[in-house]
View (cartoon, rainbow, N blue to C red):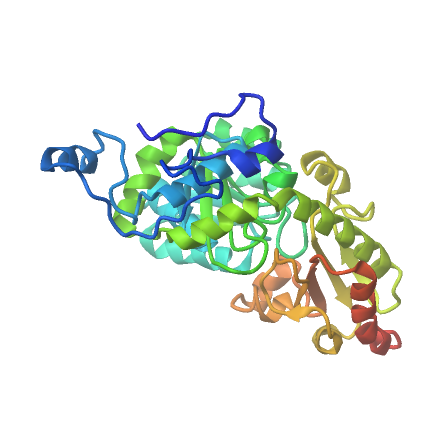
Length: 402
């Protein structure tokens, strides 16, 4: 058996973020070891045979088992409150692994129409393999219930959504899924376990793009699925062994170290985001602001209940002038990084309609509420007054637009 680090059973999330995982090697390192190896040596042929047959737990081949990757998996699982986790090469790879491992031709998925643009495209692409998807309102529980079929095997939601921060009722969706014999998967990218733990609200699987807040400094691409260890071992690990969308040991180590500061980073970024959102609501050139901490947010009360009273670090807003106005604002910034990534300590700014949701049709964008005047800011750790000044440069030129 591969041992786990021994911690008190009542260790709290911030402690788990720093300590959970595998114990040190025989050398007693305090910082987690980085195992840059493709394969592992076995003492004899019979032992190798048992390990490859899963009759004996051991590290075999880094495509599906590596100590550094397992360390990250166990730590993230502990933080999410799940019994298992499997790491992947990216967040999109995590969704691909989930579909390949759990579904087959003839199965049906119900998915929010407000999820990340690439997620929508991916579920659409699976139609050619016989997996059909119905897209419904993120926030209308009745639409989710009405979309259920006898063949529905998976409900997929992203909460808060990207980029409008729409919040769905996780417990309500879990009840619908389980009544229909389906799984509920929740993309927890925007909140992470620092703010929200979907498993505690009834979700079966939690999806992560570790590229975002788990890493926290824009260094690597990574993904993960958290859920019941029995489901992961039975359905997802065999698919991983065959398909190989595995996370590298180095990227796992970077995310592992990022988890140690996740809570303090996201709490600080959430506070800055709230201050920026409140300021944006008072700007003449801004038509609407989306942030769950604002009382004006349609799901404010639900978000505060599900997300520990925090709104997260992403603020989206619609400016006057449509696409031209959004581009002018973005181009006027001097501090914000113009990039579609988020979760970084550096504040990023992007135009979703032409970047993260650019591959969707205009009709799909409109259904998801992605206007041409929409701007998304993922707030980092800069001084919030500097961020206000950075945006004010562009907003000043838009204030007189009709």
